[in-house]
Length: 353
Image (cartoon, rainbow, N blue to C red):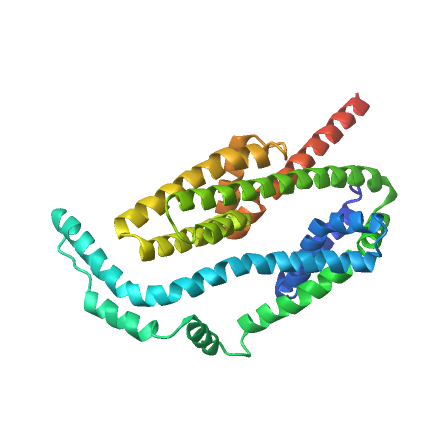
């Protein structure tokens, strides 16, 4: 695989690549649902292929896989909704009491440090009575009413909810033909090396996905059992949600931590709640971040455990939250690309010699 040696052709190719990248950035809002559908199609295409190979018509296989996937996503959301609907009335009734307890607990500690600060208990109680007087449905209705129906946020959510399933269906339906056309569009000299590169990337990504699923299942069991042993009534839904939400690094863990802490504060004394939830989630973060993810995910994609930790920190620093999501798969693909480039350079050096 060689780039054109003619500087004019090379400049044209570079300008074309820059123009395509600029157009993609300009149309990012439009391309977003289609890119999301393409990523999901890559993840689900293997299941569709298995069902189609078993004799099921491809259109029916695509429909079955997509429906099961949507049901799984809705089931994950259904784990959170009952927790919130159960905790909202308790929160509304118990929050003033919790504020009073926190004031009694925190004020002596601050005074011992020479800080004379007290919580405005009455003001906080008035705020709670004003903003949490209704139920969860009323709060959601007020939040939605504060958004203009013509606003970009609502339109974006509705657009993704409609476009992603439709685009996913058609992509899965024509996935083999689409891949074949993309390969045929490559120059003949590029097809073999690019095919090898993509095949190895596919194997690495498969290992990454299997390792990530194993981590999610293991941590869902850990959080559920640990919280239940601590006596938390809502241990099972909160623990399962936390484990499965680890597919979104930091955000899933944070949401599970907040739900568990809220449930514990409504059930136990503040000190007991903080110790229980803090201990369970701190230990879980150590197990997942320094034990399971580096070994079960990093080893499957060929990365050393220290390289996994470095990749998460580096991509997070460069790209923020999106970088954390892309850290491991992007690192795996860079590793594969590096191996191919080294092999290509080594072969060229031998040919020159």
